[in-house]
Length: 88
Image (cartoon, rainbow, N blue to C red; front, side, top):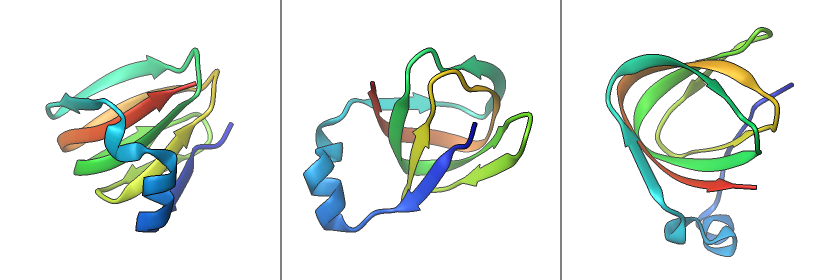
C-alpha cells in the first residue's frame, strides 16, 4: 500500500480546488494513524516522516500527498505541520 507524493503545478492546484480545502495543523509529535478513507493533502508548512510497514516517506512543503484507504502508519512530525486536506 503506497503513498503517492507529487509536486503539482499551480494549474493542477487550482483545478483540484486545493486552496478551498480545510486546513489541519499539528505540533511536533509522533502518533499512530489509520486511514479508514482515502485522503489527499497539500503541505503548506512543516516536515513529517510517515512510517509504514514497507517504507518511510519524507514529506515537506509543496508536496501533494495521497494516502490510500486501509493504510496504517506512524506520523513523526519533525516541524509543526500545516496542510490542506480532503477525504474521500
